[in-house]
Length: 544
Image 1 (cartoon, rainbow, N blue to C red):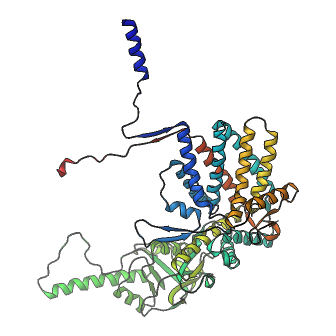
Image 2: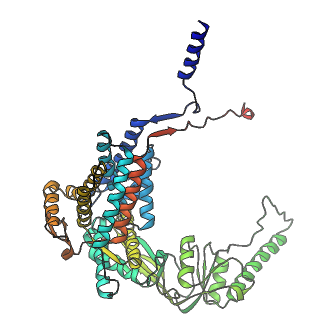
Image 3: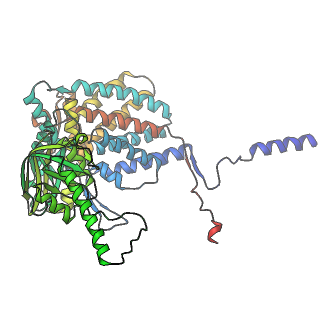
């Protein structure tokens, strides 16, 4: 009996659960965890799906804390940055969208939609009892073949300036066609290409200043070959300066009062107060003279310039510009070739900025300052006009995407065809691979092909066309050897997109496939989700 009771006791000890996680922690295991991840990521993909393509719809984003803060956009990165999600897999998709935006500037919607479609296919495969590792193995082989097919279809006109500029214009038009600027894509494509070509191969977009001004229409926007600062010249100072020598500073130019915390001065007579004020004035005048002794004719300060120093500068024929915000000062220092200084005791160590002409200009109804012939000859300003703040903000996001893509294309000059043509080419190559591959991997490879074909299908759906009919026509055209055929969303037909000029950057398309596949693989591999408990607020005995 004792032996049996001992055995039972030992068994009961084995069966009892061992508590490992802290109280309040949650965990999901196995199939439940996997489905939770799939559904979370697919939900984010569904959110962005309707914004894809030239006929994609917009989303209105309303802030919960500030109801005046409204954004109207179809930019995937902007939408995902603005929403807060609790699902771990959904956060993975948001992260890859941010990475895509930082890496190449465009394709943020495509990468999330493709990852979502891969996970939708993975959900079906898991339901068929295919192990996640088999799915991943098949996807990796399919990805390699798809990228080889994409590379084989890429064209490079980098050696021919005229053809390459035409390629850049086509890429800009394709990028802008799905944005708010789609109606004016020709005008803004030329603006963006001219601005990027001024950079002479650099990807530093700091030289391109985008200035937003309410009023007029979007068509009134223009490119200015100089730097425009949204500030005014001081009272009584020259409104135009040639061969400008510019000192850029971040220093206090108010009256030099005693700045000691909790310091107090007691004056027993008005004469003492007058002496104090005179000392302050003398110190400020001395500071102004030190600045003027640098041999400058233009002084730009990040902080305010009060009446006394403004008058001193005016008397010496120096143009003074106050309260140039930090970003404006940083960019000005970059484009004029100067450095930001705070002390003025050693003029020999100060690097001045230079411009051939500084003048006051009027844009709309506001006065601004234009710097022409700056040391950084690549600098330019794109002035965006529009009837409302929301339109101008979305126009800026659209133009920024185009500038990012173009600057990357100047370095990686290869281009591929858009309109679903590249996806269909990759899907065809992956299909042929699936026919030659034995085992369960071939099923995963077929699923990868179906996910790629969903991109042109979604583009057609968003335009209101019959996607099943169009995709079957497109697939048939590719198998007949028409490898330059894609979707023409203006007519709702299958057409030669090379003739239509629908092209995209090879680097962007390649990054979309890479990022989407990696994110989907990471989520498919998940079999357990552990949520840590929230930190409890401990009672502080000091407060009773």
